[in-house]
Image 1: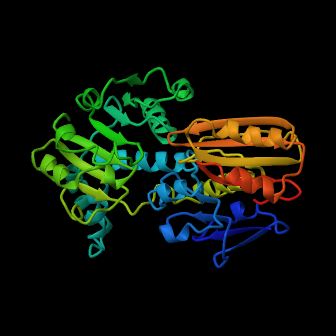
Image 2 (image 1 turned 135 degrees about the vertical axis):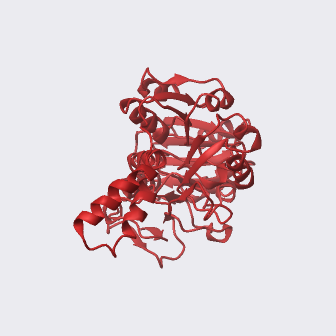
Image 3 (image 1 turned 180 degrees about the vertical axis):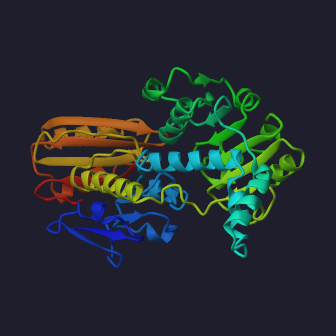
Length: 395
């Protein structure tokens, strides 16, 4: 029986995918094969010897010690695109809030509870609405940095709203490019995008290369009065540099789903309490997607949407399978195949992929592997871990 620990409130639609017959599920489960999380911050101590997978019901994995997981052969899954529509809709809200005096106008009307006469109230409202006049977003230029699952939806939405859209994403895949509207102009650099955009929306992950992406240098390339939208991650923006850019008039407004102490209460800053994926639909989608991925990995060794291991999906060719995680160095796979050949074990099918410093292999064989075989493969220099599937599964 597989053990799965849940460290956050995971949608029942996802948890229902785990069969009671082969899964023990709960937040008190000890020595888990897999952990499911949303925002819970895992530590390296949580990456115990029994752990095989961590499933993040969401896109960001900054609450997971990914490097420690990789060193121990623990596959970290996320759910890119599952909450994309929810985030896209919140970005639309932010765009409209930035363009119109909606929040200030609402606050003004809330302060008129002392007025009991309808005619007097109407006169006050009509006389004050000029203070909250805004502008329309149609015909404005939106710059989208990052054209992945969410960024592409935001870009397409803006086109449909009559905006001019420019995008930048050096990692844009061929599949991603196909789904983008032809109306979206691809920029060769962030600077080229910033110099043209009235609004800029960030949709890139936090990596060493993107942390502090919006800083004094990039902010200096913006048009005066640019509106900055951050519904990706707070760490993308250098708060001190942003405040200086706002004082200089480079940035007129900053709307973010990630409140930062340094920016709270500052003029022009609208902080939203991380509501991007807080819809019933998004939570259901993330939970179901991560459940499917973790189940397929635990039961078959297949990997989809991992942030630290390569994607690898191999249909089962026989009753028995070996899954092997190893350092991405020469000769390991040949050594494994040599061991199988010495034992007269026939390989029915196999596939292997590498990603950065690690590699992953699935090998279907016609003979049930015993523990002696697993130990011999595991002793090869560079092998991180070995799992078997079949009659004597060591999953």
